[in-house]
Image (cartoon, rainbow over all chains, first blue to last red):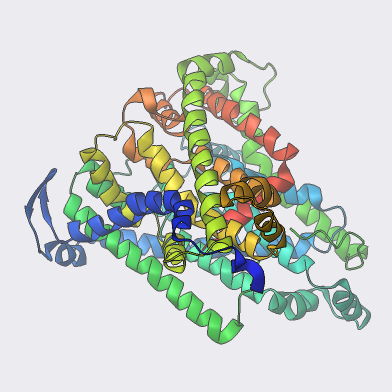
Length: 296
Length: 284
């Protein structure tokens, strides 16, 4: 929405000074390092010394790197799980609370974990999943089951995803709830009078009316699935068998711990390309099937 | 968030409504169990806890909190986190409100290009420039200083803040500013005395989510700051928890000390915080 008068204040080129601090900070800290990273990804390094420019070696190496391949697969698994555990659970919760009176206390409690720093969440859940004296195994053995090593293969990815779900379901509930609350009560009420079932109201009336928010949630979960670092690092620490290695962790290990700047930059570029590709694909789907995303 | 629908007629009543409510209460208990467990277990001795992690203890031991506070140097790292958060949020709010004001209210050469630059920041993950930034900071000798976290946290917070504040200015007519201009005020005065006060609601939102983001930031200090002297709470707690992995209840006590004030702040300002977090995260 642009009002015609907005740009009426006189034009003067010195006004650029207002934008300059923000622009400069952004250029120096984001744009220039981004360009560096692009160049580095074609450069051969030994520790912190450049040896050779113009090599494609890192990209070729990345194609046959089994650990990187594993990381990619884990990222996709993580996204698959968190679509259900984060946005799916959030949608379910929103669908329930919207139809109950006095739901504010539920909503604020479900939302609350997200304010915690990832370090608190990670260390707490590491203890919950712990083999000895863990909450989950104590419950399991109490019920007559066996101890399980939750943070190693084949449970690693689902265990981390559950923590993500626990952390973010309330956030998605809040988004979906806000969308559902905008649907006029009269629509729901007349559907109820016409004898629509609860599932009918949810699936046929409410869901289609918030499909743009569902697409938005998908976008956040899928791009977020390639950015998540904290929980993996804190829950799994060294993770020597790489049962839960994901791209961001692989990246930090490559450039930071192994000081392989060239290969790290190439991995970083791959990660960036994947995220941008996802954004483009989801926007494309959005344009074709959903229409404009409502300003929220 | 929308609060128009206070009077309700879409409530499900009868057996089905009751079933929903019971399900919800059950889900909430499962959801809050980890937190409850953290609180109860943090007040137990290690030996008592290891024997029966699930038992409701007959005697609580509060010595853990004092010990954890001292051993994890929570007071010291709290100050570091406070410095990082305060400076970053100040930078973000000042720079982004000035830029947004100029993008919405002023005209100069290159304005739209500069504005479009910030869209780049909305799609780029931090990881895409992390390596270049790390090498740059190393060469500039600011690795292991607070600036190595403050600068990126500020720069990453800028784009969404600029967008939100600009959108807010755009949604308001600029008649107030214009009449001030006619009265002879200069642009700086207009920005400070008129535009900024008008935007206080959106600026509060920007402050809230950037404070939470900066306070909770883990990856940047993990990579940038190795010396214990400059570690914020998040990464110092990481080191503490790896060093003392066997002292389970002590670790849980440290977490409780960090989490409790955050819960209190959340329940006092929950509307602001929910609004802030959702607005901030919707940048994607």
